[in-house]
Length: 113
Length: 238
Image (cartoon, rainbow over the protein chains, first blue to last red):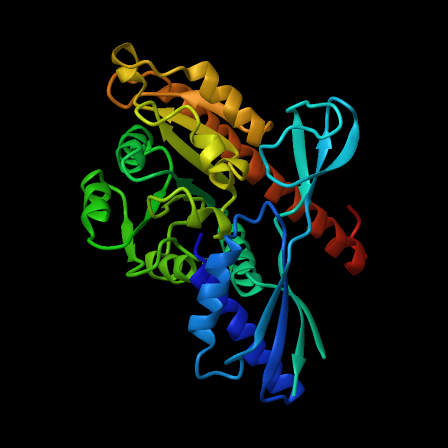
């Protein structure tokens, strides 16, 4: 989806942080993208390269953490890890799952100079 | 090292929260409509507006990449409408909707329909401040749409299966679609309808009015709790 718009939001948040924390260069950006967030990480990388050109993030390394999502399984009454929203329960194979986390899209931290 | 721990869409989420507060302050109930292009969002809205015309104030925000054709169709049905052209954007965001609400200025208590850009991917990620989200899927699409585009269905409060009058001419399996919707979203209500022959239109408007009533009852309960707190603080007996 809209990876370019996400990259623009990431850059705006970093620029805001740069004003508050007084840094001028970013060497590394760590993002956390849950596996249900609907984000194509390769498109995100491409978008980040494009929007960061000529900015304080130009040339910065982009690290994307992709933790599995979690869902509540109604069949085995437990919380399980899922890689895709439509996957069956890895414990019992059931399909009655309610996602409880995994759609987060967060900027974790920056390595700056 | 600078810790940020900030949501990538936090700027959008903050604007969406503001829209939600402003809508609540004017007792306006807003719905965000998602579907692929051509599933029948505008046709459904025009038909719904005709049915509700004169019963309560109505307003429409139309999102499209280009043209004001849809807003003109809505105005022809007698409701105020504003067109938001997203240009190269593929979705509405909360900032666009906030500006559209300010310009449209719907009446107190209005039902506000927000028709998102026809796209099952990008609009799903952007909260607009709506009270309920409605996703449309037409019977000329595949039964596996919810599996192919789970995000658009996972966030829906209601899924409307449109163009049901075409079912006799198709091999479309509504039960299989419903099962696929349940796989990505077990809590969504699913209704089948046709604007052409009117099937399901009463059930749809009943759902809409019942959801608005619950929303307004919730606002009233909050207002009463606030009034009670104010009286207590002022020492006025209840």
